[in-house]
Every structure is written in C-alpha cells, then in structure tokens.
Image (cartoon, rainbow, N blue to C red; front, side, top):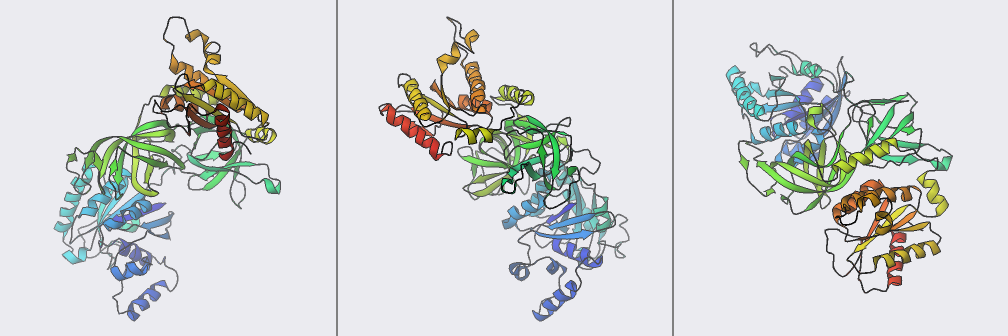
Length: 592
C-alpha cells in the first residue's frame, strides 16, 4: 500500500517517517548508528529526517527536495512510504510522489500552525482523489503538550478541508523527535485516546482489496519476440486496478475492440492464470486485433470507462508560463498522449486560501482552476464518483515540460459522440479476418493508408487523385481511387435526393466506413473531396480506427479549419504533384 506524507516545509514529515522506522526496528542493521556517526563527524545535531534525506543539498538545507521512498512492514501489510517535499518550489515532486498513493498523512507544526502549503497540499490530495487522510499535528513538545493548541489547529484546518470535500479519518497529536504517538502511546498527552500513527496506517483500507474495483490497464505497447521463434503478441502495461483472468473478455477503449484472454504473461516469472492491480504484466489474445499504446484495457461485464474528447477538470498549474486558451498542449492520461486545448476557464481559485473565485482568462503558476478541456483525439478515463480509480488523472505538457496536473471530474459530449458510439458498436461486432494487418503489409510491400486530397472547387482534385492511384499501382502498390460521386450515387444514394440539401455529415461518415473496408483489406485508398473541414477529417479518422491518414490540400489558400500534412499549389503540374504525394508516403513509412 502506498502512503504519502505531505505538509509545509520544516513541519517534520521526514522526521515522522524516520522515527517510525527506528522505533519499529525497520531500519537496515547499522543504519541508525551510521547516521549518528555522520552527524557527529560533521558537528550537526542528529535528526531522524537524515535517515531519508539522501541528497547533500537536503542535509545542508534541512528540506526534502526529491521524493524519498522506503519500504515498511507491519503484521497487517507491506507499505511503500513516500516522503514528498513540502517547499513550494518542489510541488511537482510532491505531486509525483502523491500521484500513486492510496492514503496520506498530512503533517502540521503545532507551533507554526496552518501554513500556505498546508492548504495547497490538502487541495492536491483532494484533486488526486485521495480520500483516506490523517492529519498529524507534530512538535507537540514545543507547545508543552497543550491540548488547546491541538484543538485550535484541528478546528482551523478542519474548516478548510471541509470546503474542498475532504474529511480526515482522524487528527493525531505527535512529537516525532521524541516518539510520542508514533509507534507507542504518549505519556505526555493523556488527554488523547486515539490511535498512534502506526495503528492509523493499519486502519487504512487498501484500494480494491474487496475486489470491487473494475479492471483497468493502460496499454503500454504490444510486444513480439519473433527472433527466437516466439509467435505471441503480448499486450503489456501496468495494471491500475482489478483482476484479469485467462478466459475473460477484454475490451479496449476508446476503440471498443474486444477479444478473449488466452494467457497472462509476466517477465521472467511463472504463469498464474491472472494478473492483478499493481503488476507490470501482459496478456495474449485469441485473435489478432489492432491495439495500440494509449488504449485502456477493461473487462467485459464490468463498469466501462468514459470515452470522449471533452471533459470538465480540476487542475493545478505549475508552469512558468500561464495556462491559456490560445495554445495547444499535449495531454497525457495513462499511456495516451493527445493534443489538447483549454476550451474554457470556468473559474480560478487562490491555491493557498481557496476563499474566492477569480474571473480570469489565464491560470498562473500555483493557481487552481476548473476548466473545460477539448482533446484532438478521444481518450478513455474514469471520474471520481466511480470510486478509487486513478484513471482520471492527467498531466499537460508545454514545450516538453509538464506544466499542469489534474483530475477529470465530468465527461462532456462532443460533436462526434454519436458517431463514436456507432464505431464502438461496429468494432465490438466486427468479424475479424484470419489475415493480420502485418501479414498483408508483408505481402503487399506497404502498409494500409488513406490519402485524402481536398481543396477548393475546380482545382483538379480528382485528376490528381487518379494520377496518385496510377503512380502507386505502377510502383507495385495495391491502390484504389474513390471519389465522392462514387459514394453519393451508390452507398449514400438514398440521402442524395434531387432538390434536397445533401446531408454532408452522413456522407462523410459513410465515406469513413467505406474507407475502413479498403484499409482493413490492406490497400492504399486515394480519396478526393471538396473543402474538407477539421471535424469531417476527424470523422473519417475515427472510422478508420488507427489506419494512417494523409491529408493533402490542393489550392492556393486553405479555406477551412483543416490542417493538412501537404499543401500543393493549384498551378503545380499534376504529375509532379502526384510524385510529391507518393514521396511523402515513402517518407512517412507507408511504402518502402
């Protein structure tokens, strides 16, 4: 069980852990004496925090910079104790340490009282969905074991936690330096009849220990070890919650594809027939479906995750530059990484006080905000009301640096929600071929792909598309040209009635479904369409379900919100333009 200890700098977090380990005999033999001798030689007073603070800067400055982890065991269970830094400059490290914790100890100095970071860290725990929280009021020896000082801090901090919907299990008065109420009851505070810190740890409930949490495993990758004659395709990742057994049906989100588990796999370990929460493991399937990094594996029959591109989120901004609605960021949730924008900043709160909302258009460093976020591709996630699931946590990256962390609080509908449901239903009922995409690519000498040539009317899109088809065919590729007219008067004929406005949205959806058939057969499909918009492109990409899509704009100016890969002037020689497109396919790995 992961326990994180947080609190304001110098309030004694590391000392609490060091004393706990020392008093229960959990330290390696000679460690305590080694630290005592080091302090003697350097003329420093001995501190139990030195048992954890391994960095030179930490010992010289008396603060925790990195996140220290130590292992601890009681009669009930094993623990990983995480000592998270309290200084405001190391909030990123604190969040990293707390992100995988199931419970928290929050330390407050009895003499200094509630400080700015005491509030920040309380909100961080709330935002990360950590509901098992115990507040340790430390350094009671400095206030002469005064119960009134304890009760005053308890009332003040309790009122604050109530505003962020955190209700602590208990408040424990301790003196980490002297060992009071750490592993044994304190004779100095007879007025306190509650549990010690050690007893408090054992009182926590381990997430999913009753088997109530559904299976969740973000897909890290699919591995093949063909060099040694191993034909298995192992879907690998770290199991966030639940259990998956041989014979279970697993469903991957957001695609909705499903298959049956044939074996479970561990690195250099015997087969057990199941994988469970906390393990880095994998499994093989009874049929070869295209699964990629970023999907979330769940078990059929259990609560499915939410899927979408829009959601409401609570976030905490740590970047040097303000978070704004004008930039595109990379959002990472589990193993998924997608482009994302802040669609709307609903409100901004002061991270220390949380007593008022600010009407702002940006989120500054160390501020907390409620935002609507829109992603460029769908992701799978869970929201807090689903229980102790961690698959609603995310970070946002700006210029290769993590700038924001948050938790998804509500799924919101988007313009493709209806179509996404149809695609998932299609994938769940798809009858798969015995020939895999890899086998087709090896036989054909190229991967499946769709080339969409769009642009203004009268620019010769169909002519260019047919030249690309001919060039691909002459190069030995399996290629096919599909113009919109081929679709409008065939598959979509019933919605192309004379005298009526054509339902372009449904035409595009059907175009995507037809394109899915061609790419599933391993072909390179060349499509021509007039003035394709970004939403329409996303609709086709959704239907194609991971197949490579290359967009080309033919014309002197882009007149929609589409962001094509290639832009070719309308006056360019069409044969030269076709060669450019084919060359781009080779550069992008579609063709050799």
